[in-house]
Image 1 (cartoon, rainbow, N blue to C red):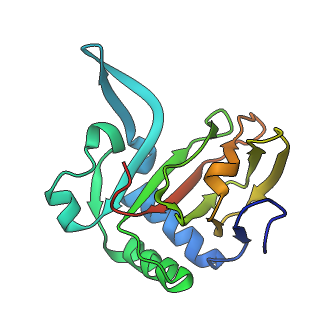
Image 2: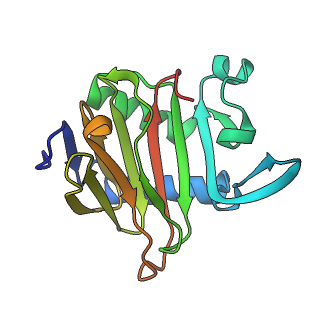
Length: 195
């Protein structure tokens, strides 16, 4: 479904089956322990625990080169199993290749992402596939031109494809809202040059 925005953005509510979404959420929580992967950074000579729960899936080559340090991106894992299957499915669907997937965990509605743009590693041709798992959450696009807001809900197992002009014409956000009581996982696929 194309969204009514001045950019290339598509939404697929049932990209994953219910069974696929449940299995993926289960593996990321119970095998990889995403909910325990709170990022700690060194700032001003002190270790600071952030409110970000994240890690990356990556290629062996990028891992060997330490191209995405754990101090910034969280622990790095090499593609395997159900995550490699998901990578193949996203690449087959989009016709593009992705080296990385950033996995973020939001324990409940008190955890959020403020308005921001994502890095355009291929300029305006950057494509960012984003999978949602778990709790349905509101997601917003805000125009950089007139501050108009478009709001939608991202469903469990859905795919949001942000393409041409999404990052230059809009900022986006996962708003804070305490009404959401359950955890949500976001998996965003990236190119190797992502920093």
